[in-house]
Length: 411
Image 1: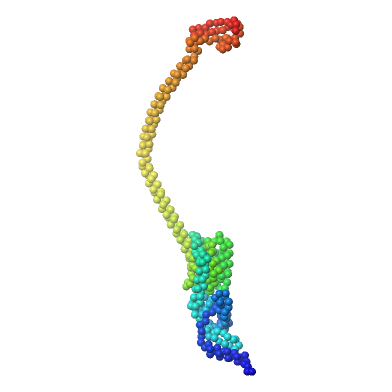
Image 2 (image 1 turned 90 degrees about the vertical axis):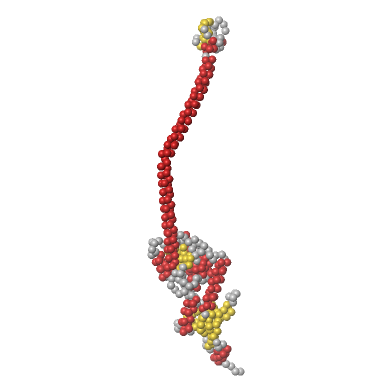
């Protein structure tokens, strides 16, 4: 029985692959691992996953030699704004290689960044569509920006130049406005962007009443490190955040998903500071306009009232004369009515007195005596009851024309 050594079998495989797959091929795959060696070579692992279920369908090792990698990486990152790292989908031109010691591998010759751009755009669209379906896409944009956003919660890397530029721009504003920024540190590039920015936002939300606005800024750094701002969890958190969010993460060409859901997007940390200064300046200008309008209205009101008082002062003598005349006429009318009423009352009182006088006169003793009546007294007191008289009592009886005396003989 003939047999081959392992090396001989490996040579046959290599020859067969070289003859069967002699060309370079464009391959779509996802980078699952990217490892840069000290000598400048880059070793990658490519995978293909099922569209549903995320099951692994294929896997292969790849190599980008140093002379290719030093040109390919900056070309890709400048074109996409995306770091050449695990987790992205790429379109690579590769040739199939087989080595007796190292086995099958793919040698990378070129990369098409437009494919990755398309995949990134697709992922962004999917995130935005999901946020829109959930009804939260524009929630942060719908918040009202405070008239005086002075208390500022800043999410940025500790010690970052962008944060320093932002604070310098705020504090040196030409209007002398006072701001109160506070840093909530987060990692602004790499794999921990989503995790640390959300953690910073959670800390801000816990003391939300102490802040007017949130600013997320990133100064310096490569545009290839922006992929951390294109994730659904971070976008959903910012879209539903209870305070207006301003982003200035240092890129001009493309908007990240974070930019699209934030209340306001500017290009740089300095631009974020200028936006806040301009907001206060607009409020100050509106206040100046209001003060000027109020002053003008008060001046007009004062002039109008002065003119009115002048008119009253001019008309006052004639008004006083008219009032005097009216009051004199009224007094004369009252006096005339009093005279008539007094005369009438006097006649009535005279008539009443005459009646009373006749009544009194009719009830007087003299009048009663003239009518045939008499008054009997005993010891000067009028006798009203015969039984009260003792026998022998001396009585005086008064008539209209005189008096008689008598004595009681019996009762």
